[in-house]
Image (cartoon, rainbow, N blue to C red; front, side, top):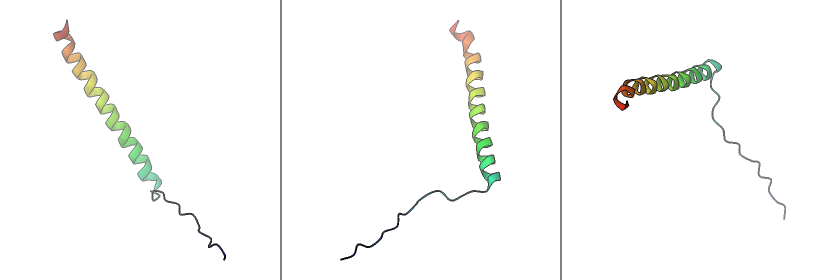
Length: 51
């Protein structure tokens, strides 16, 4: 009996256009920077209450 050759199946995300990938990375950085700005703003607002 001969063994059947089974080719491996490769699963990966569909490729996006380069501009879409750049926009996604810029959007991610923007979201993180807004989070940091909000956190620092809240921290500065509540420091006088803690002293």
